[in-house]
Amino acid sequence: MKIVEKCDFEDKPEPEHGNLCMPNVLVIERRNPFRGGAWRSLDIIMSLWFLAIHVLTLFAPFMFTWGAFWTSFVGYVLSTMFGITISYHRNLAHRSFKLPKWLEYIFAYIGVQTVQGHPIYWVSIHRYHHQYVDKIKDAHSPIHGLWFSHMGWLLDNSIIMENYKERSNVEDLKSQAFYRFIERTYVWHVLGFAAIVYALGGFPYLVWVMGVRLACTYHVIFMVNSVCHTWGKRSWKTTDRSKNNWWMAILSFGEGWHNNHHAFESSARFGLEWWQFDFGWCVIRFLECVGLATNIKLPTEAHMLKKSLTSTNE
Figure 1 (cartoon, rainbow, N blue to C red):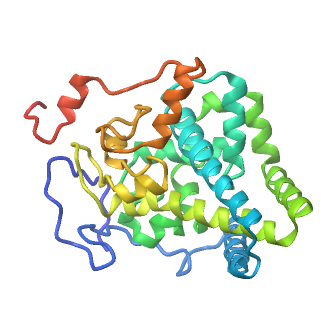
Figure 2 (cartoon, rainbow, N blue to C red):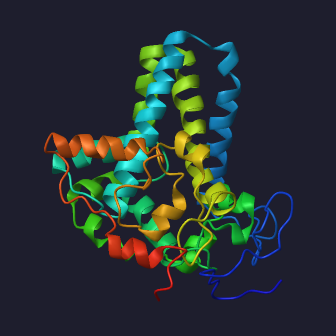
């Protein structure tokens, strides 16, 4: 299969490649962690973890209680909105706004309980994603295959080791003792929280909070990588396959306005039109109104004009 180093999509029509699963997406280097790859110990641990979470979720219909359901739902909102989109993504990865350190650390700790990696790991991977977006070095681009972009890359750490082993793009987090501590003790925070859930609510709460909540959070955030680089509308000139997808925006509290985000990656607001509902942005605006969020970044009119698909400016 032909491998290229650059996939520049700006101002070019969608190619007619792909299949029913991946319309209009050209798979340049298909990767499959289960076929011909050298499995690392971390790949095995990740596979067993995801298997355990999904097996746990199978018990949900038999362990249903309203208390466990609502605790799981609230946990999903906190995990996905405060932990991922507000903290890990907009605040830490892109520095789209500033928070007092005590609040930044609280939100980041909520992100730890999404079990998608400690902040240094998550932020580093995401910054590399923007640096190499939809190119060979992008760990979770659909150019490696739709399933691989969804979660296969998490089971094949060779792509990370090959391309950005040192994580030299997160010195701002490495310089802070809090994030270094979380990096060293990450697994104990996850296991400790699971133990607390079990102690307080028993097996039904373990199923719903550690099973259903995490499975839903995983797949919604993973779909931003896969779905939002495959299906949707392209509203701005970008050098990638990012798309705006309204139903993903609902599930992910604004992350689905993904073409907006890639066009203006430092913007704290993802839903740029009045009708593009972005609950993460609503929370940030509230935090600004009460004096907790400052230095909020938004795209300028000149920047938006330059990125407009109707613009003739270069």
